[in-house]
Image (cartoon, rainbow, N blue to C red; front, side, top):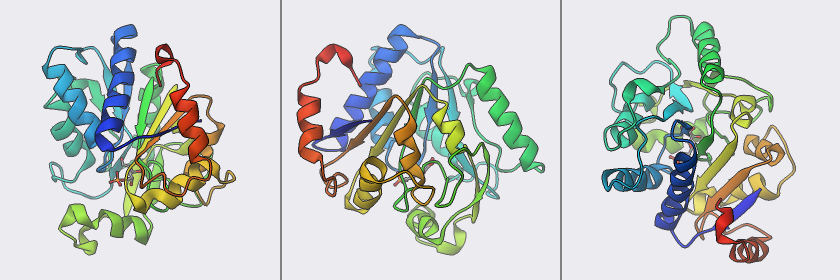
Length: 261
Ligand code: F6R
């Protein structure tokens, strides 16, 4: 696991976009794993800026979103599909029909989850998966106690997650769905490169567990320690509880440029 302590969110956005640009340079039809929430927005903004400047194109790429609320009406502004359309599809040249999302509105959610897993396999798997982390240590919506081998399925959100996300719903906790369809931890670990980003002091405890804690279903993000290619990018605040922070900085500074993330 590589840990990058960046100066600010903008540097995180630039570094992750560098990795996407390099990937797409080698693999123009790369498969991107797209998280939602506030953390990846700085990445999507930088990707959009470079695509609009003609530096690279996502026209042949495919995308799979990480999770989706259950029970929100179609076109709801906080439906994760709507968010990805707004933040990634519209401002770049990735084609909307090439981006798939779990169907949180399906009548048969179990079948929809199985179909989503199959679609990811059909696409050849995800090349680069962008992830955020919840204050309770979730990735995707794999809340504490999630099986570390889990696949796409319905999960009930913790009250902490619903409180954290109430800001997207005008501060109204009752408006935040109680369930979501999420890729499982096992699904996420199938991606070839995992890129997790975290900003702000509220994430410091979860980031500490993710990087330095023992692997435990009670901090689901710790399962990433099992993956051979993980990059964790944090700002100073989110990295504020890392015990080996100095070493992570030294290692990143010593890294040759050609290696990328
Ligand atoms: C979003 C997702 C969640 C978020 C996490 C952090 O698709 O799967 O795991 O990444 O809740 O959210 P933010 O970035 O809003 O703090």
